[in-house]
Length: 170
Ligand code: NI
Image (tube, rainbow, N blue to C red; front, top):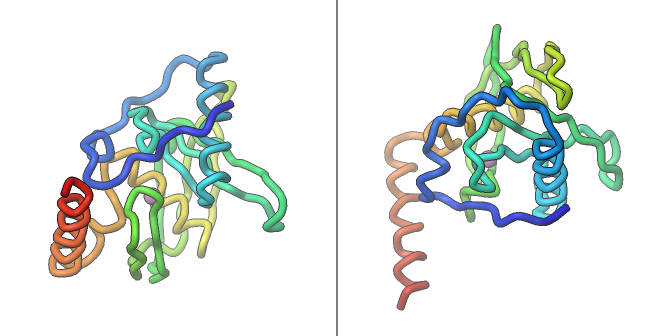
């Protein structure tokens, strides 16, 4: 296992549409192990493969009941097949540094996905966990939570990042 570098906005890989996974092999298991280690090291509650530069449809989400525990749900090729209601909750992202903001999401979702052995599974979830899944699945479509904010907030954030990058170079 290895801790991988988390890419940050505006890295172009974060904007790519991730490819579906069709081969369920050791290499994939190794990548999941890396992503899990990287997520807990950050620390974060979810991580999508594009965030470590792998443009494939894979996410890991922390589902541990207690903070000291580690339990990970691995979702391959996840797809939201139904949704209802709406909720607003605060979000942040390991790839969008120095920003948290309220985002409107569906309140309840049903997601189909495959596990590490390629079995097709389905999960229905609501509230905070539904937010996390929508956020991570967005990453597989090249979408970041800032895309859900107003144009003004997004522009302010882009300017802030540009300024940080300029200062880094200087
Ligand atoms: Ni994120």
